[in-house]
Amino acid sequence: MNIVIVGTAYPLRGGIAHFNALLYKHLSKQHHVDIVTFSRQYPTILFPGKTQDEKGGQEGAVPSEQLIDSINPLTWITAANAIARKKPDLLIFKYWMPFFGPCFGTIARLVRRKTGAKVLFICDNIIPHEKRPGDMAFTRYAFNAVDAFIVQSASVERDLNAFLPGSRYALVPHPVYEIFGNGLPKAEARAKLGIRDERAILFFGYVRRYKGLHTLLDAMPSILKLMKVKLLVVGEFYDDEQKYRHQIVENNLQNDVVVHSDYVPNEEVSLYFSAADVVVLPYVSATQSGIVQIAYQFDKPVIATDVGGLAEVVLNNRTGFIVRPEAPQEVADAVVRFYEGNREEEFVNNVREEKKKYSWENLIHAIEKLTRGN
Image (cartoon, rainbow, N blue to C red; front, top):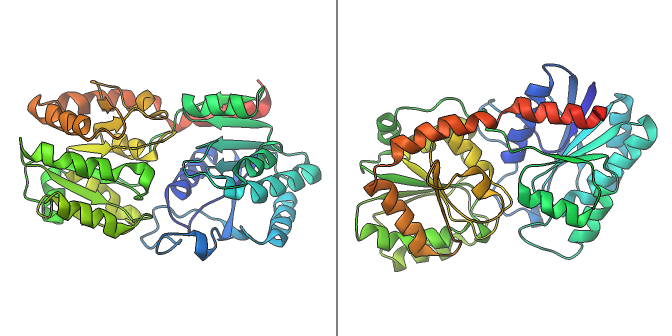
């Protein structure tokens, strides 16, 4: 097939760009693939981060054309015309928030009209974590131009069936991220980070309210009453950083929490995961989390909350622990059980087995089957 992926890609940064780079790599084994990405993904006023561009090395680099300005409809038309000239059989969009509904929906309609190409959306979310006026209208506009969907958790499957009954779709779990290279020996990673503690847990990713860092910080005093543990908080703050800094001081955690409040370049991701014993995701809400797939890539167990599809991927008492959201004592108890029960080796072995199901080949097969109607 002749396929065009439309969405975030290098030189833009972040998990969607990483996903699309890996999708490009695996689709290209059997198909001709192009990527059309953004010249401007977000207007500055709507982007809470420091930069929208990848500042690290070339690990996520894929060939792409930067044709789309998300807030300039004229570019949606010119991008659609450029895509139509490629005569695609299939357009693939990674959909994660309604803001892009008008843009994606317009491009999909124009290309379908000119070429007859099929349109497939890979959905991270149907209902966004942080709701805004127009969400449902924007999503409906986009989805009415779609032939088939990939959903990546049962919670998103339920949302799709409620939002657009009768949709053609496949449920395929989020594949593991392969883009960050291999892990390092734990001792080596900790030495590079200057960590001398025997125990280290990791909170990784953009910090937003729904990610639940506040819950983990409230759990730390209970953990520290029983054992010495270093918490690594690694990721750019999309929420008020000072609020969390104040919480660290209030809980007297200055010597127990290391904060790296910046976006982590691809080549440095393995360093933080390799240094940790376990990854903690205390989300308040979620559909799924790409952070679990990064953790699994590095054979790391996960402690997560029972929201969205996290319990589908983190198997309670096998690859980690599942606890209730916004329950600091349950998070603390899970961390203590992990260490006091010496569960790391067992969980790591289970992760290595469990992650075999999260292959890119499964996703590619589902895309091909949906597109061909078999």
